[in-house]
Every structure is written in structure tokens, then in C-alpha cells.
Amino acid sequence: MLPGRLVRAASDILAEYDKFKISELLSTAAATSGQREQISDGQYVQTASDIRRQAGAIISTSRVEQYPQDLRVLVWTAP
Image 1 (cartoon, rainbow, N blue to C red):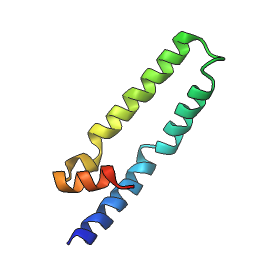
Image 2 (image 1 turned 90 degrees about the vertical axis):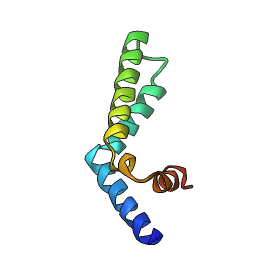
Image 3 (image 1 turned 60 degrees about the vertical axis):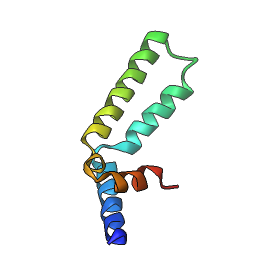
Image 4 (image 1 turned 30 degrees about the vertical axis):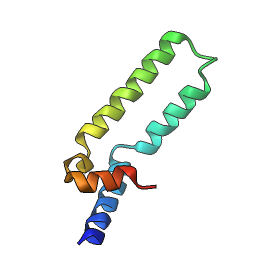
């Protein structure tokens, strides 16, 4: 039963990766971090705040958050 649950979790994660545009969010975060010295403090704070807000929204609406506790632990702590 566990292998089937893990396959389902992997499928959900891949679908959400695309749905929530995780690659784009990570690219924005990396670019913002890399440009820290070149952008104004206000712009940096605003962009970082936007990224944090988006990440929180993703986490709170993720299907993974609806999984039973034992499966969530496996998903979030997998290497």
C-alpha cells in the first residue's frame, strides 16, 4: 500500500510543480538574491515579501497538506 501512496504523492507533487510554476518562483528568488546589492532595499523587501507570500499560498493549498500525517512526513523529509 505504501508504494502506491508514494507514487500518488509523486504524481501530485509533479502536477503541483507545474500548476504553481515552482520553477519560475525559484528563478525569481534566485535572481532577487543574486541582485541583492544592485537593487534598492525597498524593491528587495517587496520582492522577497511577494515570494514569501506566494510560497505560503502554495503550501497552504497543496494537496500534500491534505495527506495523512505519516505520508506528509515521508514526502517533506525525503532526501
